[in-house]
Length: 127
Image (cartoon, rainbow, N blue to C red; front, top):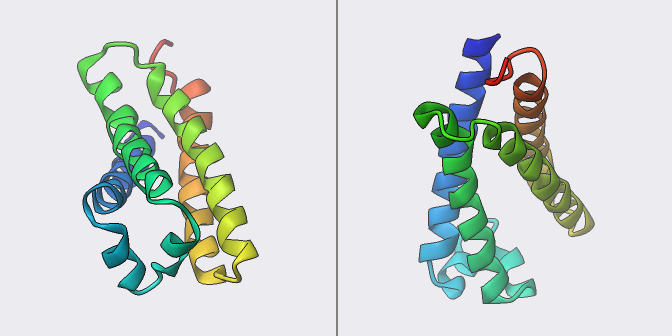
């Protein structure tokens, strides 16, 4: 179980870091022109950059606290925050009729929920 949680956290951290860097570093006009990026036109560039920053922080929060053994409770807290972020993303993409993106986001939500459940419960770092 511990290995599965680490694998899920690693995968989710890679996704969050890649997505966050893209959102934070790419001009909104370029993002909007990319496949599936038309949603950027409907929100402000500040929100896009903010989401990118949150995703980068989440990538570190899913791994770093446990690796350095400093406040490892931040791992499931980060996972829980990611669940909330993904609920918003699923809602946003579903309302826009982007069900393929909503389905992918549900996968990320499920991974984060598994991490939160596992690290708050049976495979807690404090136990």
